Image (cartoon, rainbow, N blue to C red; front, side, top):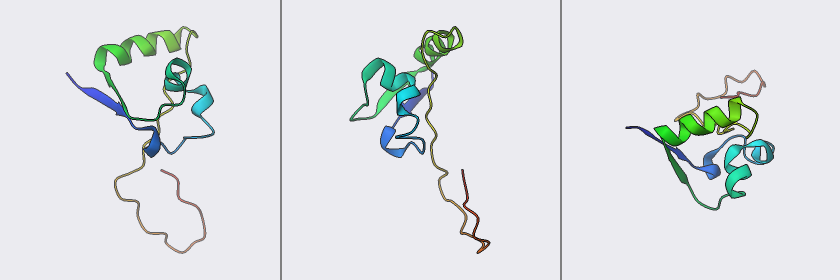
Length: 77
């Protein structure tokens, strides 16, 4: 069984998307990581798909971002 670790400190959408994330809706803005197993993710997905809860808005950074090529454009993961 796989699990998903929700580390809000590493979420790239933290701040703007927290108010519309299932973790904040259920637990408030967490101070620590949360681990969701496959069944929890499935149930949260069903609730979000039915409109009862917002979806998980977790956006994790890439392990190593490529260096800026000097074109001045922001790089988004």
